[in-house]
Figure (cartoon, helix red, strand yellow):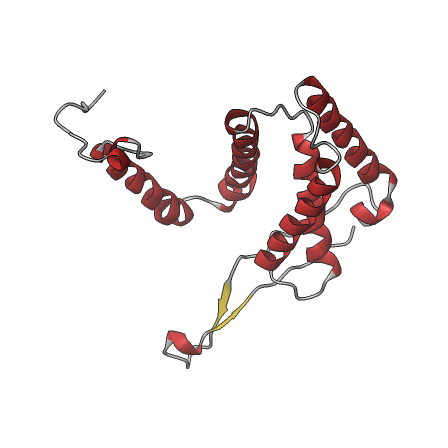
Length: 194
């Protein structure tokens, strides 16, 4: 341990219950965020970002959701991956079936669709708990997986889905334009068909 908590006194209850009560923890977290936001995109190659960083962030998001559900709410979920799949298929379908839809808007739409599907499975499961809730989430997992493999609309009628990784925001400006206020911001989603 590089630093100690001694000498850092808490004078209020809010300071004592803070997420990061130690000053060095707060500064360390800020440094990690700056490195992640500034340094990683500048240094990392396309391979590192698309093959390692993005899947890592997706799995971290799934783990955080499961942590909230299991750790804070005390509910056991065995069908968590099914709802992650609903979000992934919904984002894919929104990006490919609606032309010129911005990528962030398709992510928000996928989140809303996943919320509706979660409510369809969650509302009947409100009165059950414990082992029975775990079995209900497992049943949701199998029903969602069956729908993905049996209904061709979800996968676009093909066994494999391909979608080029679109840039989040691209700035198109000509050489004659000197100010950044004249830059045109747009997002593109390209659909590659096998």
